[in-house]
Image (cartoon, rainbow, N blue to C red; front, side, top):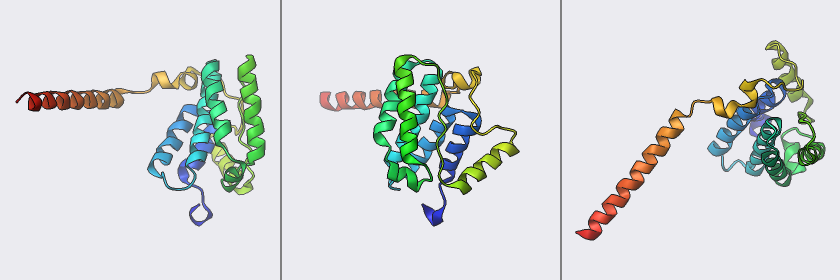
Length: 183
């Protein structure tokens, strides 16, 4: 990591994961960072943490199939040694993921996972930030629809416009190709 510091997006991911339990936001934050830094050497770890957040999001929504898929992929992708470089107790996290995965498979009630941080300064900094915002670090998440159904409540107009533009470009390309072949 740069100068012994962690990326801001990673710290924001940890904050959201433990203080707000907004797993959808966790996914957004770390995915943006991962895509912008493909050669930082932590790609598999970022994706594994993203999958952990997505798995928790699905589990909380009672989408067991999605939870099992994402938690399983997270479990296979995360490496304890790489996690240690990010201040996480890797072996302990993998055990927690195994427990969440088993719970999702057998139909147990959702329970939040707390990522065990071995970097005490990082943990204290994040806990202080949570307290300053009036948030309880590591508290169980609620069933507030704004969190549970976050993906259905977001503004998708930019995505829809980008897809429409891509489809139009593809159709134009097909039309141009036919015209040239017919000429």
